Image 1 (spheres, one colour):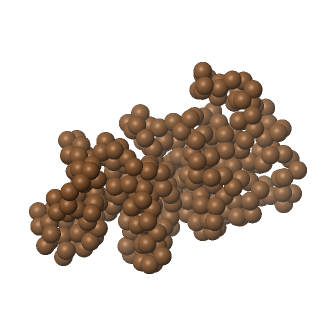
Image 2 (image 1 turned 90 degrees about the vertical axis):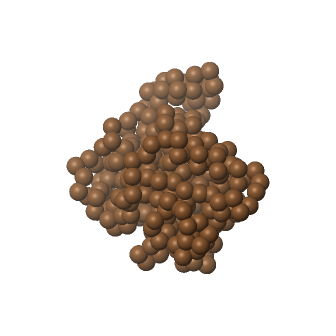
Image 3 (image 1 turned 60 degrees about the horizontal axis):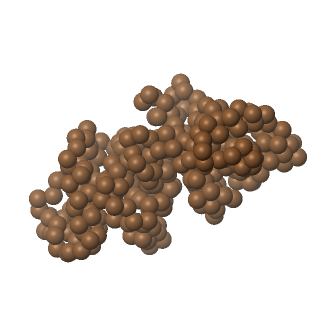
Length: 327
């Protein structure tokens, strides 16, 4: 898979210039990140502010700053009432588009921006709610999902779903696996191999959770995917270590030393798993990146470092660029 630096180079090589909006323009780290993006000529950057008074006087001239209180929101109001017809009255709609998280998503809906990053001030729920309500999920999926890009030296893996779906059913788990595999493929992974994880390896354990993973695999294997294979159910050591897999599951379709994508059966397992890999295993965790939306909206941890924000921005820009190229 491409590294963040390689993605950065791919973005520079592209003739398509992505416009990315950041809902939290006042945040110092967002300002620094925006400066880096425009100085490297990686994207057109829009920062949102509540009023003109919040806009820094020394803001880089290549960064567009929008004061929501001074912006003509008539088209936004019409569009959000159209999209949320029957679910939102005009008074409530006006209040929503005064909020930077909703304003940013409405910019995307009106094609004034291609992507958004948010989360230093807003919770994950407040970042995703407007995206799900207005941008909505891709017609190919019934849900949105999330991935972390886990890297350590030359190793790179995709973990899913570690931030979003609490207890997906088997059909949803199959969609989560499919989205993560496509994400890895877009990052230039060749012949993507995906392991569906469980506390059971090929029937060694029993229970509803095992049944769910087995049924998800049946669902995936009933469809045709180009250069992607899925296998499971298997314990993490079986998936990760070929020598263990050769003993526990000698007929596994996974031929690489380790699969490219690890699919956790629920949010408990996924969230705990990626944090163990991060804290004990020394892996860097970039993300979460939200998959399945019609346009990319990505969430930041409220404790995100400048490096975290830059990496999330690069993947978000690349995702928007790839989406545009595939249209």
